[in-house]
Amino acid sequence: MYRDLAGQSAKLHFTERTSYHYPTHDAIILLFTPGIYNGSNLAYILYFQVDHSTELIILYHLINEMAQNSLLDRLSTLDTNTVSDALDFLHLKGATYGIRPLWECPKIVGRASTVQVGVKKQGAAPTTHLLTPVIDAVTTNDRVLVISGGTEGISCWGDIIANASKVKGIRGTIIDGTSRDIDGSSDIGYPVYGRGVTMISARNRLVQLESGSPIQVASITVNQDDFVIADRCGTVFVPADRIEEVLELGERIDRRQIRMVQDVRSGKSVSEVMHDTNFEAIHQTQASPEVKEAIKSANKTLKEATAEDQELSALFADSDTPGVSDALDKLGISGQAFNIMPLSNYRKVTVGPAFTVRYVPASDPPGSVGDFIDDVAVGDVIVIDNSGRTDCTVWGDIMTQYAGMRGIAGTVIDGVCRDVNRAINDEYPIFSAGRWMRTGKDRVQVGGVNESIGIGKVRVQSRDIVVADANGVVIVPRHRAREVAETVRKIEASEGGIRELIASGSSIAEAREKLGYHLLQRKG
Image (tube, rainbow, N blue to C red):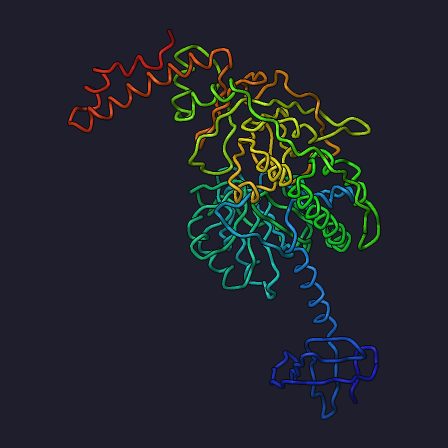
């Protein structure tokens, strides 16, 4: 008798036949490409020999596995920014902050295998090392280990279990905690995302409490088999029962973003391209929405820098932020922006007048988020005060693309940015308090431009001179720019003399004493 689980007849075309020993009886695996079963393409059929009779059973869980792989393939074409936006539209939580790649690892997409760890009780009996039972139990190649309960400074991960996971075909590990031996994970190409690195072992400090149960990761509830996507901007979880909705909406958002980038590249005004009406269309429920072109032709004339702006910027073109910082200290000026750091280890110094932007919480209805950029002059540095918020972004790939095209020197943000791959690949300088994928739309709006703002505990006036490099960001008051530049020149000349004396054989103490090193940055 040949039947499937529903008792239906089958028309099948097999291309390969192999033996297989099933736990309860022998079987034969018949593989075919494509195989046709009642008009559907399948992948695997098991032909069982039971008690001298035959049964042909279609294994529906294998068909389901194919469908799940298709969902993962679709998810892998998106990035965390787009998925986060889709979750926003659906009012779902899933975007985490602070869970980032711990080496330059690739994007990972998969299904969550959840693990809860906790502090080992004093006097507790020895037990298996945390995570090893979960790793040993993995039988599919779609798994991402998601670990909750990490303790600050104590590792939840190391190179031995990274190697074991690699062998088992696990796609990567997400830790709400820290990892050690990160070079070991990097050497074998095993992706690890977490809050940081440490050297302290979990042995006799942390134990595995349970697995396969709901856990909390950065205040997000993650269930076993939820979908996971992680890249340079962070980590996002998607509830398994909502994945189809999120993917459909994410794919529409992605298509719209591509069209918007194309519009920007063609020279259209970013304020019109990014107008809220162009995002409202994404709310439409059609699977493939076609929205009429609503963007009008815009004035493509760039706003040129003034002669004085060019002159003041040129004063610092050959300086770096340590030298300018020392000069500010010497003159008693507070200008070092605290905790505002570069996205990448930039080799060049970014210098330009500040075009200041102040963001505020969104009103109802929300206001604009990016219209100001059409008023920024060539060579300006956009300086954005988002009050240090890390829960939503104020800068993404379209802004990066448009700013680069318009000759804007760079962007400084007291807050976070996203779409960092675009900025890094385009070599567009961004300095911020961090990165995250969640949009600022409907969360913040522009409250004012070219007014006094605060950046990293420093007051910035419109048209102050910004100097930024791999070391961070300093702000030079415009009315003292020439004085600061002259002080920088003197300090750099003295330090250059010290280096020459050392090269000629002087001790560092002698060289410093001779050229008054200890007085260089002293106020007064």
